[in-house]
Image (cartoon, rainbow, N blue to C red):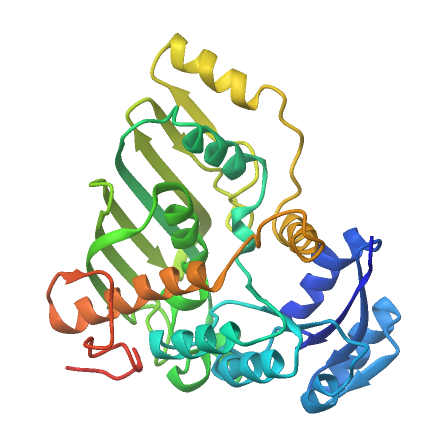
Length: 357
């Protein structure tokens, strides 16, 4: 099994990638370099994990043929240029969410992927954990049946000190608010389990903090399956929780309420009757524990690179999540229901930050 060399760019969330993603797979990955403009933070992370190579130059990493993977953990406003540059340099790329700030930019990345030597894996680490993956197995086995309705709640708390970080809370650098930076995780989980949306009506507002971007949002979705879904999110909840409740013909699923690990057990899996319960037991009765978040996503990424598994998260997945963001912003501005897919004719396709009111 070949060990893949990794350079981390951005030592904020990048530290979590090291702790949860790469260290548990020390036989598969080796972090050989870190890059950050904040040299004190870079020194702290480098000293903690014994990473000797430290640089403030992104270009230096791209030029190094000994580095296999560039892991981008920088502020969202520069993801596009860094992803495209890393792909052009022949690297495999891991990129934190949001992948970028518009559907046009996602399509630019997808065009770059077509001729790239390496592959891009966006981060959606909330897909991983025993609870969500049991639910996924049951749904994929056809046991759950017709989807009816669902509710998704991202109730988190962000106070002014969170926004003391200069790039947060600003359209130019964070690219959006609760929809882009926080609820994107749960909304991806929803579509991972229940499929894509067909129509969207949404509202956004800034009610909690003195910032540019939204910190409250709600939306009503009609899914391609015909199911109805309600989304609700705020950064002003005094009790933080993340919750999905999905109602199918034969099974109701409810996630754990842990705000940052909702994919972990315990999930409620409520069968319609004994026959359905027996079918569920057959498909998950031999369940082997699945590590949550980055640990499993990075493990599956290595399996893909070794030719043993599909890419766990794709640019298509990232686009689908950002298409939902785009539709909610468009609906909130226009007051109208928005059909999907969202294409170049949308006033938000090129840049969802352009306000139309």
